[in-house]
Amino acid sequence: MTMNEMYHGPGELPHVLPVFPLTGVLLLPRGQLPLNIFEKRYLAMVDDAMRSHRIIGMIQPDPELRKSGSIPALFSVGCAGRITQIAETGDGRYHLTLTGIARFRIVKEADVETLYRQCEVDFGPFVRDFDAHQGENQVDREGVIRTLREFAETNNLQIDWNSISEVPNEALVNALSMMSPFGPKEKQALLEANDLKGRAEVLVAITEFELARGKSENMRLQ
Image (tube, rainbow, N blue to C red; front, side):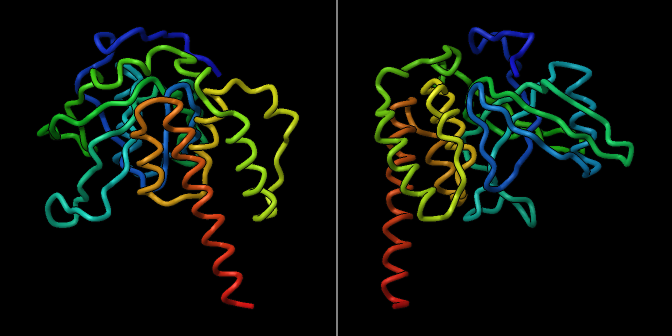
C-alpha cells in the first residue's frame, strides 16, 4: 500500500501531532501498521486526523517513568504515519492502516483539551527517513536472513522464504523489526537505530541474544 501524498522533508509535516501510545507496537518509515481503534479518545483522534492532515504519531509509553499520576511518560522518539486505509466496522470501531513516514523526537507535550494527547515534535534528526531505500546497500542481507531462519526454526515459525527473497532490504529489515516478538525496550532500540544498516545489526543482535537465552534455558531444563 502506497500513499497518495508524498512527503519530501520535515517542512511538509505538522509540528504538533496527535500521539497514540501503544506498548510493544512499532511503526517505521514506509512500514504498514494495521490498527483496531475502539476507545472513545482514539476514535476522536482518528476523526480529527481525517479532517486535517491524516497523520498520527505512534509512540511507546516508557514503562520506567510516570508523567503524573496514572499518565505514562513517553519515550522520546516515535514515528509519524499517514492513514492510508480506514473502514468503519458498524459497531463503533475503526479498522485502519498507518503507513510510516518518518521518525520524530518529542520536543514537549502540548497542553490541549482533546481527549487524546498531542506533542510538539521535531523531524529534523531523522531527515534521512524521507529518502526511500536509504542505506539498503550497506545491509548485511545474508546475515539478517540467516539469523531469521535460525529463529524461525527454533520457534517453529512458518516463513514464506520465496517471498522474502524478492523483498528489498528496507522493506525486509523494517517489516521484520515491526513483526518481531520482542519487548518494548528492544522495539525502541530498533526504532532509534541510526540508519537501516544499524537497525539490521540491532535486529540480528537481539535475535541472537534471544536464541542464546532460549538454548541456555533448554539446557537448564534437561
